[in-house]
Amino acid sequence: MRFFNEWGRFMMAGARAMAQWEIENARSIVSSKKKLFIIGLMLIPVILGGIAFADSIGPELPKLLGGKKAYSPAFYSFGIFMVSIAIGLGAGLITGCIGAGGGFIIAPALMSAGIKGILAVGTDLFHIFAKAIMGSVIHRKLGNVSVALAFVFLIGAVLGATAGGVINRVLYEINPVLSDAFITTVYSLMLGFLGFYALTDFLRSRKAGGGGDAHGGGEGADLGCLSRNLQSVKLPPMVSFDQDLIPGGRRISWVFLVLSGALVGLAAGIMGVGGGFLTFPIFVYVLGVSSMTTVGTDIFQIVFTAGFASISQYAIYGFIFYTLAMGMLIGSLLGIQIGALVTKVVPGITIRGFYAMAVLAGFMNRIFALPGKLGEMEIISISPATGAFLNTIGIWAFFIVIGGFSVWVIGTFLKNIGSLKGGEVN
Image (cartoon, rainbow, N blue to C red; front, side, top):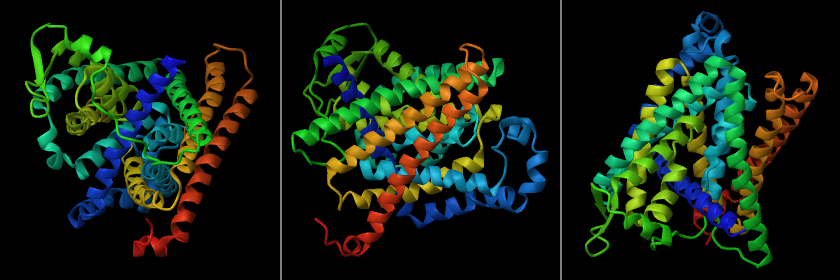
């Protein structure tokens, strides 16, 4: 039980750190007319190719670029663009309102809409990279970036992202269903663990009569036993950090940084979530880096890890769909703004309960899709009808919960828009 609690706290810290990065990015974008204008320019190919000439362009697209025969139904169409906006909106509402990783639902949502898993992962990575470049807040955090720490960490991240991309592509080449089953299994394990921990945490807090901040408390940077042990290993070259915060700073062997980076890169390459949800807890709880240095360095690495993985492992192989990425970007920017405002009028404990439901809905979506995929590969004995029925249950459960949550958040926002605009809410 102690391991469960510690690992759950580890994952939640990462989810909150990733969400905080997304919220800051979104605010940076929507507050800049120049950045909004650039997004408008980036939408021109979507409007011309995805709407005006969808019927004529779609059938002519080569398989490499996402033609109908390649990754159906991820071809140019206005409907797919609107679905991607809705998915981005739902993820943004979760991120802004709950302060935890709404991006976890993007790949499951795209796969539920019929998008191949490898395309969902690649497109999600590209969407994160575009958001990181557009809303870059690096310049505001440069004082907290440990260049040496980031550089060594990125060596491992590049290796890990390459491995993750290769794994997904090889599995896809062997059998597209195998690729989907692998990605589905990874998401099932992660969402299942995180969802049940979030539910347990919510029930425990409610029983204790807690309210508090929906976004959770801050995470400290006190050295734990593991951090002390790792920093005591003197395997050169040693990397120094936190010199401005601690007399003499702290030092850790490059080996642990490269291994940590490889794990983050591998997660980014396989799951398409940028890897940022692992960087914060690994830096703070495992390596013993201060929270202040971690935040700046995490922002720095997300740009390069997501960019490298999305372009070198997916884009050049045709596993990114631009229309979907832009739709998710637009939807998430809007959702994050609305969600962040709603936290001012809703008790934190309520929002935490909704987060547990949202993550568990993603878990149900993927776990119910898995039997049908395993049946297609003849790994288990299940009829196609039964597999399709279970998959349908998972899809409906997922979209009912996420849709219901979205309606509730938007409804709460509209109901309280007057007081929010007037600043009357405490």
